[in-house]
Image (cartoon, rainbow, N blue to C red; front, side, top):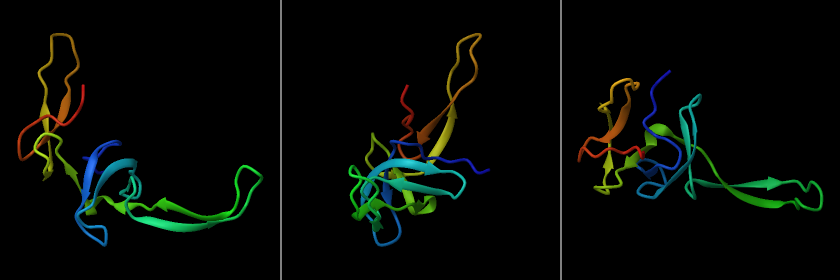
Length: 113
């Protein structure tokens, strides 16, 4: 399985397709199909059948998945689209070693905490 550089709640920019140039927050990452769902990007319309009084029928707009290669992470510190690198963090004695995602352009750590 490939490693994924994107996580839920990351801010990304679309780099290919009809939504090119738009930015949004990642809602879901589908690791099996290499796809991501980005908030308010790639909206599609679906016809929904009524199912009870709480769920009336009609035309529903929702986000469709984009291929993960068509989006790129936006670095929160330098505000530019960037590739993601990995860096080993310093650990205290007796702790497990940890790695963090870093921005390739500015070197800032992308992971919170």
